[in-house]
Length: 390
Image (cartoon, rainbow, N blue to C red; front, side, top):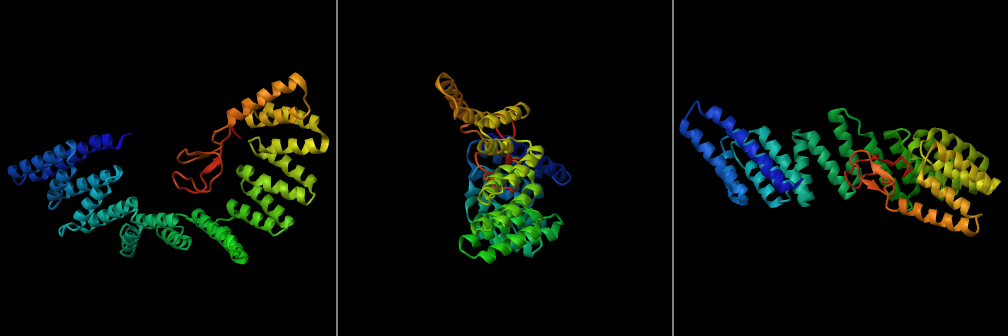
């Protein structure tokens, strides 16, 4: 929805409700006061509708000085300016509210929280962090302030502070923050490993697994570290553990695991793992991997037979493409030309298709992300299942 349209839709409701509440109280004291309030509300609204927000701000700042309902309406006004991207006006609204000497502590805290969000949206992260840290120190709106501090730390990739704030938040609301803490430790492990601090990287992975037992990302990273150090046996055990921990990550686990099996000449063990994954995983990836194993060991005819059976049970364009590619290798003449056409069609069907989707916001991607690029939540991006996907 257009933010400007939303502003015009919601503000009249907010102002009228605030005016009505004020009117009910004021009518007991003075009819003139009622008229003054209603006139001011509608003058402010008229300025907004005529795209004169600065004049509207002055009106509502005056109303906010002695009227609680006007203050709450004013908070909504600042919030809507922020949603429209008018950060200077949003900041001005909230700063003026905070400066009011008669503003009670509850409303001042809310205004401070809103101002911090203004700073974040404007990219003034240092100011936002200082403000939120002050709120936490005052134990005012601490859970919300801590969550904003965690968001800032993630943006700045300050994982140590993000972990500290997450633990503090966990202590306040008793909700586990183990999953995101484990991700933060994995970020630190990747950084340490990239800088050659191998022992430190391993220690961070152990912290991740303590924060969130059987954490799939930590297991996949640990398996990769073992591969880079040439320890195929440890890598295999770790990747197999990862499969047991979360079978939904088959597309990420199987490729490096199969490479470890091949490099250590353990293809019988590979077949056993793939057959077990075939039973447990609803996608086509294990079937494709088994077909390739059969093609190299038993010949393409056996691979074609196996894939044909699997596609009847799990229809998939990915599986069909694999069947066509396998059949092409032994085809000649017109049959080969027809298969080439089908191959081109399946590639076109798959091109640009989202193979992963965030289960929270619906963001689609071709590759896997541990943190959704759109909503910034962790571990919400999963393989898409269906005929056109996994």
